[in-house]
Length: 280
Image (cartoon, rainbow, N blue to C red):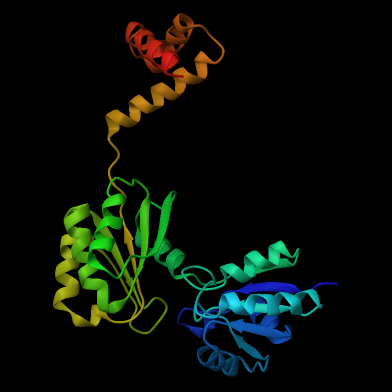
């Protein structure tokens, strides 16, 4: 029997957020692969767990994977944890999890805290569709290019940002996304000085610049998606309907039925159906 690789979420601040299942797994596996063994040792000490730790971080993960896979294949269970939150979400672990699947080792998630999802749940912005973008580039030009590529994205956007770059990042967002785009600053989630504030990007620039406390700690930015052009969206819906009808009906019949369903003029739908048919 091969071992199991457990991907274990740990608290992002409040230690009471760890689950009973996570505590059980961390106490019973043969080894814990941790992003920073010194950081994780404090958590384990708090929990009264003495499981051996091995460091697996960005700089050594590639070299550690095979030895950990060998242990799993030999029957040892291993837990993968990051410094805080859910592993692999802007944290190391991808190579190990991918290698485990390749070796037919069972991978089991032990769910728990995730800063991105916690911020989204409390943001008050649309949460049915969202895009997690992680950390933007530390270099100004590259960061601006990344933001420009997202300027028309209609999904809610979630970013992580370092405290020493937060002001520059928000200023770039304000310039590229527009001053009136809504944003939520979620800082130090679950910790003593937790901050969750919704405002416009222009207001956030002022807030962060005028209060240096907002330039400290772990930061998540949840940004409202771009407004959907209602006319374009309506046209896309009509086109999608016509394309479906054209799979089964002639152009004239497709236009007639689409007119009955949408209330649009039959002649205009007929002309549009001809264009769509020729393009397909």
